[in-house]
Length: 417
Image 1 (tube, rainbow, N blue to C red):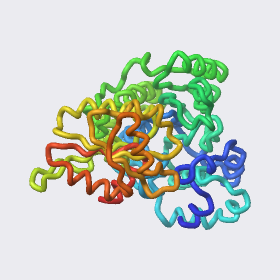
Image 2 (cartoon, rainbow, N blue to C red):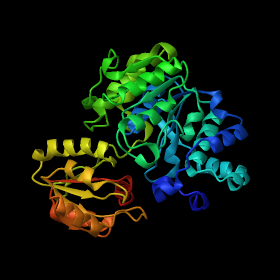
Image 3 (cartoon, rainbow, N blue to C red):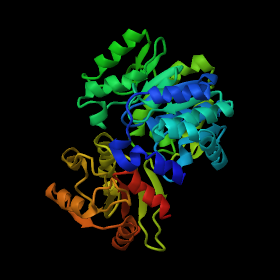
Image 4 (tube, helix red, strand yellow):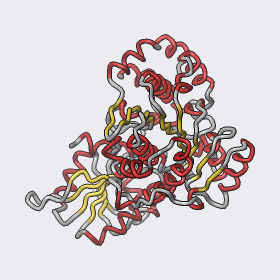
């Protein structure tokens, strides 16, 4: 793994310099592997936010129906192997360390000669893993975009686009319509597509792409619900899951006749999606309030762009009246647009600004100074462990510590458990 990450840096670690536009290298890698993804059915999921939760809920539901399901998502929180999992029945397993090592050993010469991106390597590894495991179906989440995404070598039985927000604009475009055009690139000729959320700017883009491909198009809010699930039914309690459930329900309405799904079994799988797939960091409680040790409840969420942070901030605002005080441990990567993000953050909380040990991290002292200009006063603390210790010293069992702003900030929370 050290060799892999040193030779092929990830986008999450080094940012846009790791981005490799085009899928030519992935197509060559896929051909060398013998096109493993053609040996199983796939469902393709793209979108600015919600695609990870939607993918995990979908995989959990399909597995509960008796299917052997591959699940490919990114990025990982703690363990690289989180990106590729087998989901069966009510449990999951990650790809083994031996299989990761075997794949890298076998394809080392190809990697050195062609120098694919880390995401291309992990995508190829996932396809090869799922084929070797003889999966019935795999849920494949895109990386940054859609049209030029490494995963777009597949021809799925269903394409899902959760929503569109302004993110990774330097790669995908600076308008919602432009980004929608990139995400819509996963729509394939004759393959049905579901769009979770749309705006007046993005709907025509999806309609035009679907028409050009002869693909049946469903907008989730216009579909007849078939799951009858609410967020309160899930072990993923974020308010924003209501949007993802709407998207999922529309998708299942298309998949049910295709795959002969037992809808009640599917619902039961979705109810326990976090547990059954090992999903972490989605409005997750890491510690309950402890009146004996006078410790506050800790909740975290990986929402890290303006589109996602808005949903998180709204829920923090909504529940803040349930606590005496809320302390928000907050950190970002440097490329985030604070002019957009700062106005979305809650005002009635106490901030501790910090940074992860990552080259892309926004320096904690600079972040604290800039945020104070937006009326978000708080303390700057150099390390996450120190920030968490400070939060504990300032709170008690009737308070809340919320951790968010970046995948890497949330990762620190898991590593400090």
